[in-house]
Image 1 (tube, one colour):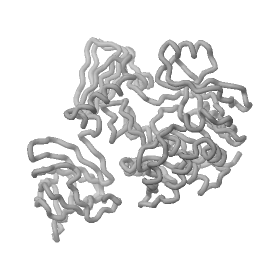
Image 2 (tube, rainbow, N blue to C red; image 1 turned 90 degrees about the vertical axis):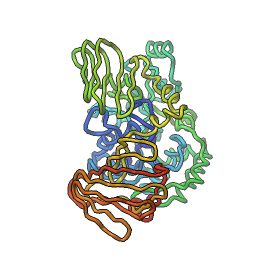
Image 3 (cartoon, rainbow, N blue to C red; image 1 turned 180 degrees about the horizontal axis):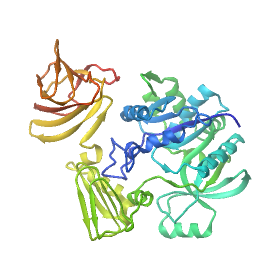
Image 4 (cartoon, one colour; image 1 turned 180 degrees about the vertical axis):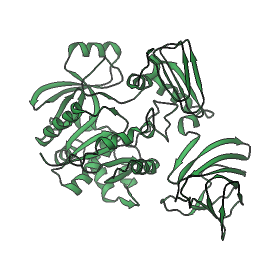
Length: 475
């Protein structure tokens, strides 16, 4: 079969199971856990074979749109489209939208492969063999899910029971099973014939749309209207919010796969993890002679079978076993490895308290399409930030109603607009921005621009920004 596969990558999730490194505004797919590339970037590379794949379509939300575009640019991976979901509506509406756009651009005989952006997969002959078997089964008229060959009685995944053999390495789906408890998971593994539900699919677009119309017409109607009324915005496609918000919040498993007689599963003995907990990160990491996985500024003494990661401070661990210690810029998690599946419960507790809720939402460092900023110090009526601006980029022309700003250049060269004046600044030079004054910051140089910003005023929230002109389409 010479037809190329259209990859559809889901990159809009806001999971916080890898807290404190993962936050709702900086989820795990965009994190560099223990390598030089993020999970999203590695997913893009997985579909980089131009003989096998078309350029990918990305499903995400407006909050992550610049992260998606910038991370693709950094590894020089072209994207076909970035579809922006205006509200979260689970996988069925999202994939319905993607299928409608694939059918429009490539025809209903196209085949799309659905991938999560936050899975860790070893790319080898076994993996691409599974892809080939799934594509063949899809070409023969089946909606295909990838079933991972279990390596242990895991409780963090749903399971699929294989049915009759269809040939070519594919089987019918007998039933889907929710995440089991330990006893049930052990029984399923002992019985055999069960696979982990990976959340990856190979879908013939015409058949998928047909099943959506029959089995989930409310999903299909909302998706159709959202695509019809969508608008192009720079490199993004904004789905219509009114239409998309009417779609039910339902997964593709519940909406289609548990109902359709056309479902098939391809057993895939690949090295795979959804990296849904710190113990899964530890299992995939490079363990030392004591079974430890460590990264960042860490020291371990008389410690065994543990995961110790630090993105900022130096962490020293002594005399412990089977624990996870994760240090971010502003929070540290310490827990038993066996409890790492329950970090989500801790995050919900933190989010319910006003004092700790921000720790579940944002990092001290926030990224923007022009660069970003790190919060250094917060006080009553003042705060200090480190700004960094990429070469050739500039911030919006803006003003603030409630604060003034003082900028000191510590690295690089700045071009600052204040009212009608344009002021060049070099290292160790500064400028004052009065409250209410129009201003803009730009980096005309070839190296990263870094500044210290001191804000003073009665209100210092990020929503006190009145943008007059913005090349990134922000309001």
